[in-house]
Length: 380
Image (cartoon, rainbow, N blue to C red):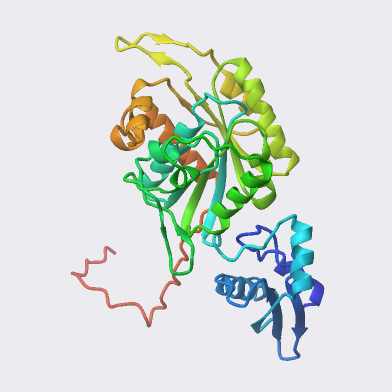
């Protein structure tokens, strides 16, 4: 029979999909009982009685504990954390409140960051989200650049979101496919947002926890440039998020972008890769100009020991389509810039865990269907 320590070790593989930590680390394992007949009983404490991710915990506990030798069955029970336990957990996590299931069905959260403004980070976010959808993945874009919000315009959405009966904000779906959320939906058109740090923290937390994101394979977060309040808030709220760094080729931009990567490293967040934007301009007659320098993206990727996911050429069409709300990867999928962005999107997919289909057992000879056709003569 397995020991409680062995079962606890298995339970460290059960991750809360919103807090992005194991139920053991979060103190959500109330009790473990091992019966003589090989039955294991585990009680998990939820943050709320109506927790929408209860089934996730039940299936994950059964799956991982059943892998232990000697376990014949696993029973999972639930109770609710007391107010004191919730308060302790909130204090441990540094949060004003605990989530209630909004991000539970988002598999991968990717923060698109840059060291400074003007490198095309928002354009990359919008086009990457559209490229992921074009390749058959469910994707969304969250505009976390509260002061410089631009994702709604780039993805062609100019209406306010609806609210569900459960009082969750329903993110609109853009014409190119990704679901979108932005502070731009809640302010007057082109109005300036003048907020201090605590208000930013609250807005970002609400976008993560009070929006009905539903099932998404990828949620791309367009971060403001630099390493300010929003970046630190996201690092605190999403400890398993991954960072994607956008830079331009010149050494000055590359060195500034490195600071953003260092901020992610301080919070133990994984750097997924680097995208070099504006890597060169090719004239209609084929002559190429390196207007913003050469090689900065590869240099940054080498320093960070991560892949260079793409080199996107300087393209007038990329800017034009962003201005009218139709991403270039959707409007002109065969253009050089589109191909580079789609390559980067496939690099994101390759770098994130994918669920493989379960292979069906091969039927036995007795169960196999009869073979039809004309028998061939056997050559002696």
